[in-house]
Amino acid sequence: MATGLFGGAGHWLLTKAHAIVPAPVLAPFFYSQIVWMVGLGYIVFADIPGFTTVLGASVIVSSGLYLLYCERQISKTATPVPQA
Figure 1 (spheres, rainbow, N blue to C red):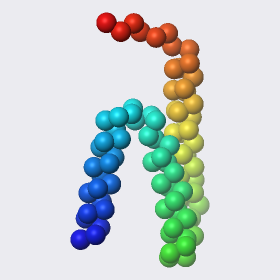
Figure 2: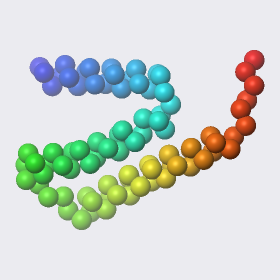
Figure 3: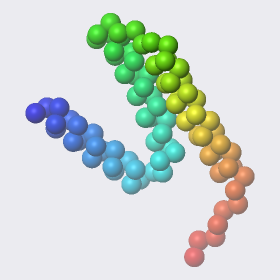
Figure 4: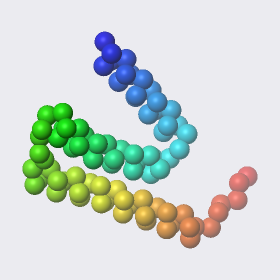
């Protein structure tokens, strides 16, 4: 029951966060979940991630950080659109 309540509350907060800020702002928080889950998997279950897991997570995190960098560069050089 607690899993359902916490999961439902988490999804509701996630929906609220997406309503307030654009997805590229939230993306780094999702990528940090990968690091947290690997760490908790090691602490709780003594699970050492394999090479493919580390490689895949590295590709996902680095591509997300690269996209965030590109978005920030575009927003710095973009001219503001006048509001009507």
